[in-house]
Image (cartoon, rainbow, N blue to C red; front, side, top):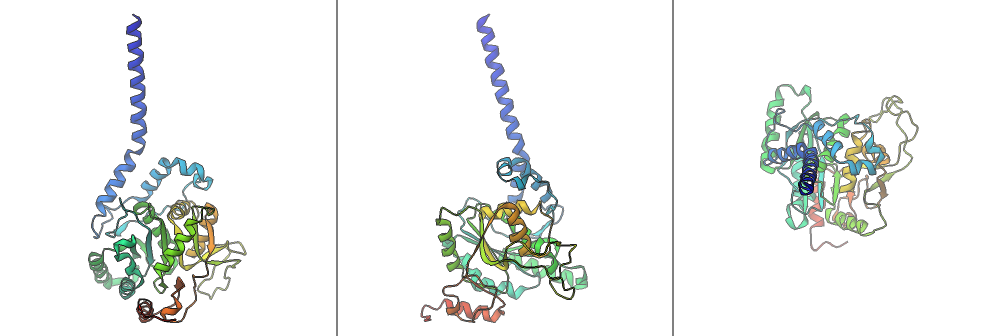
Length: 359
C-alpha cells in the first residue's frame, strides 16, 4: 500500500513537471515559428508581396511578451506600444548575421531613386563590407514610391527590384519615401537590425551624401568598448546641445508647438552620421515603439528615444556634419564629412586608399 502511494506521488510529480515544461515551451513557440518563417522569406533578395511579408505588429507583441527580463530591467519598456512600426517588407536584402560574428552593420537611408548614390557608396566607403575578414554588412533602406509617381511607378519599381537582385543589399518597406518620413525610415533600420542582426557589436547610420572612414570608425568603436567603465548601450557622433525648435513657418525644419511644445530639444546626435552599440540599437527600437513619432529623425531616435531609454550619448570630434576638404588627408584621422557630390566621394576614397598618400 505504501509502495503504491509513493508510485502515485512520483507519477504525479512527473506529470506536473512535464506540463510546466510544455507550458514554458509554448510561450515561445509562436515566436520561433515567426522567426523561422522570417529566415525562410529572406533567403533571397526578391520582391515580397504584402500577403507573405512579416506582420511586424504581431512580432513586436511576441517580443514584448517573451522578453520579460529586458522589460523588467527598463521601466520605459513596460509602457504600452503607441507607435507600432507595422509596415510591410516589399524587398528584403540577402544579408544575414545568423550564426556569424558581425562587428558592424552599415545602414544607409537613401532615396528610392538614388541609384547612382548607392553605386558610389558600394564602390567607396561601403565596400568595407565586401571584405569578409572585416565582419561587416551593408544595407540600404528605402521606402515605397510616392503616389504622385504615376505611370513611371512600375518602371521605377522594376529598376529597384533588378538592382536588389543584383546586389542583395536593399531593404524596402511600404511607407512613402519622403523627407517627412525619415523618422520612420530610421525606425526601419533599428527594427531590421533587431530582427536580423541583433548580435552585431555596432551599428552605423550614415546619410548618402557623407564620406565615412569606416576602418578609422571601427578602431574608435573598439577603443570605446574596451573602456569597461562605459555603459553597454551608447551612441557616438556629433552631439547637439541646447538646440531649439524652429518656429519659422517658412523654414524646411519648421516645427509648431503642436508637434513639440517645449523650448529646447533633448541633447541628440547629428543625423548625418552616428554609430551605436548593438545593445543600444535594440533598446532604441523597443523604445521607439513606445514614444510617439517625431518627424526630425535625429532628434527622435538619438534625442527623445535615447533619453527615454537612458542610452548614453558621447560626443566625438571625429564626426562632422560640416564639409571637410575634398582630400584623403582630411579623412586620414577623421570619421565623417558631409554634403559631398558623388564625384567628391569617389575622389576622397581614391586619395585615402593611395598607399603613397602624404599629408
